[in-house]
Image 1: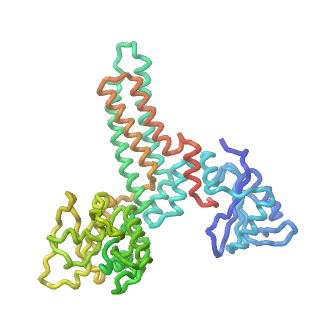
Image 2: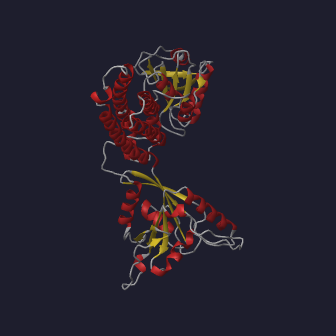
Image 3: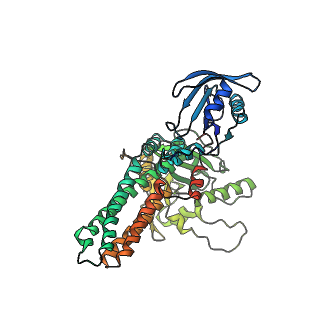
Length: 472
């Protein structure tokens, strides 16, 4: 059912700044009337018409193309008019102000897409995919977002819901015929169907994990002592001179972020200040920010100079991650265990090693096996092995051409659905009351419905659409 009782909304639909074309979008019951007032023309549905956009006193603000999409055959399901003119920001703002003067109001972030969802033009997964497509940081991420927008993810969820619905029908029948001498649970193969549904749910979860990786990427923090080659490693991974490199310790004072794409997976690489004691206030702040970045890292690349340590000096390798106590107290210096779980050691400058140098073997430290990589950020030696490790840590499979975009909330809902389905399966094996099994299956559907928006709340919608652009 289309929502026609809403306000008429408007917004600039193109990115801010200078451009050849700029679009002001209008959606709602008065969209066509407002366009007539501004252009003095009656637009025909789905036909491009040359128009002049005029102020209230008849002065021409801009000229361009008017497009009218009649309800319900539009993106939002409402009447939509797009006034396409020149892309100067001041021109667009003038046209937008005129539209508001004629009775529209400025749209909230994501309100056009929200109306499309409320009017059943798209489901919640497709709505989120629009934002993911706009924000995609790699070609593969854009492709996966487009697959979700085309309904690939939704179709998988709907198929799973249909399977659970079929199971629920049989369970509910078992409740209705509980007084009969009929074992519907066994005769209809409910237990086997549940196991098949859970296997399918596991497959979807694995695919969704890949989709989250494509959307969010991997946060990688490069840490270490000054002059170990951290900035050189950033430049080598990025393929550009993003960071200043000198032989002067302490050159990097802030956290520098660089976006790269590795085998289609977005990666956010952070170069940090060298960790050491310093009397320089600016460098102290740089070290503080470096430590803060470590807490947000999916993976830490601890860079040290090759040849500076041997097997007996593992503590020295870890020293850059040891807590620095600037107040000269006697607090023991230890490495946070949560950092070790996300750490690999990168021995840089192998091009400077003598021929007789023997590499350190991978060693255990605090019961955690460290990954060691010998590289030269200068020559590129060893970089391919390090890159392969980054993809392995992420669990990313670049060969999957049918990936769809997904979000953390989808993974959380799939986990909850799996827990409820697991409870239902256990209920059958333990011969629990059928009503309890039926309730578990109902919760499975609830959790899956939250993914597509079949079951949702106003708070969830507000959180999702508030992150959109105004013009979306």
